[in-house]
Length: 219
Image (cartoon, rainbow, N blue to C red):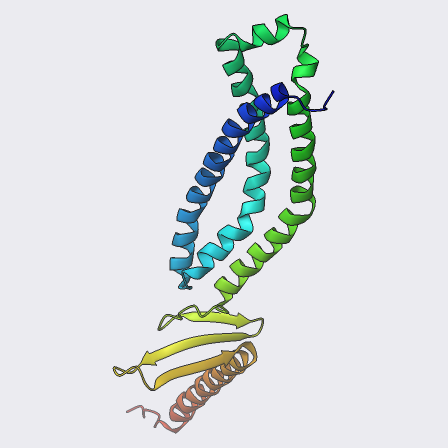
């Protein structure tokens, strides 16, 4: 007697069709919802549009791990509901097939998809999440060719800030002012010393004028 009979293949077809449909619909809804947010994020950061599709591709394993159990459950429920409503389940029970025998194919599908989901969650999902975070960091740091707005400070690394001060009408040349935290600290220190020097000089000038001013004589 073969391991899988015509009845098993029939049940497998009834399970696979709704399972694949639910999987595609659930994954598509998750991708479309995230796509809108990613387009808004990339447009705000000024990055290229191709980054959106790269980030979505890295999110597919996460969405697949959510859609596989949902598709499997609804596929089995809809398959046996169809058998029950068409009275085919009653005929199978009448010829001596138990519920355990009828669930042989759903059990096999569940074991295969559980192993696949374990592979996705244990290996593919952390790896793809790492690449997703890397793309997000590159986009925020400007490594992917993000535009830099005029008059705003942009942090390039730990101790470096970039600010485009002016932009010529012909776009060239572009005046760029590069400041580091050390230079900024030196500039602030020099400004403080200069302010202190001029305030002391002003006080000494007032004291000198007070000493040199003639004293009024009493008549």
